[in-house]
Length: 322
Image 1 (cartoon, rainbow, N blue to C red):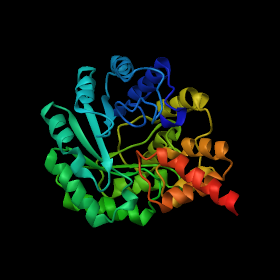
Image 2 (image 1 turned 90 degrees about the vertical axis):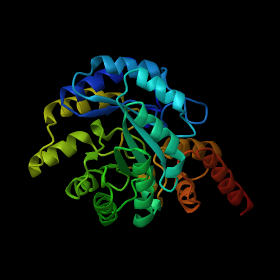
Image 3 (image 1 turned 90 degrees about the horizontal axis):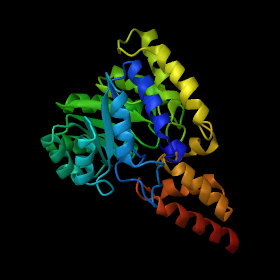
Image 4 (image 1 turned 180 degrees about the vertical axis):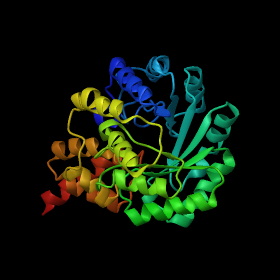
């Protein structure tokens, strides 16, 4: 929901979900960009309550499993139970790439509750492969059915993506997933690399709709896999129709690798910081690129959105003092 500042209507949400279901997509995630209970002053209010989105989408699905995202510390086990009651099949539990232990209770409870449980290691570009594998093994030990390498900043180069997926595939008994952003223009390329290296699950969205320069574009990914002879079971035409007729018309700004989105990948900054950064730059009269470079230098991670204003004020003060 990041790219629309979480302002999807129920009709938009169900129309997109139905088109994905018609295309035989296996899992469809419906969540605030910061997960269950992310609907807040700090992360942005969505247009409708989470449970309303979940229930509405569940009603239109005949093939796909319904998924939701949860970030421990934002979402709670009670939120997870609410999602289960609303019909969620897959819960994706996300932590920073060095903080898997934060999710121990959530993953274990989700497994006991009958969810298909996914561990999500965000900002994976910040963590060396060996340590990332160690964190993934923790999530696996807590009960995750699948653990994801999550390139939240769209910062991984192709060899870096290959190294991480290959290591996960050789070291983990559970399934391996890959999620990325297109900030360096590598969304589809790195996803194909992940598939070739043995990833069981990969993420993508219609028209690449997502934070920053967006996620891997689903319709492009399926066109490429079809050309390569990789069997996915997903139908291309409904995806093209969904991207062109449902998603692009509601974009508030083009989801593309423009200057600021490029800087996210270049500096290694969490993709959902983009709109917050642009607002802070305009408010305080500083260059948004400078804010992003400084956020990257300070190694800010998801959940530290409040630091964007601090950085903008610091840059403004430096300019005035000079």
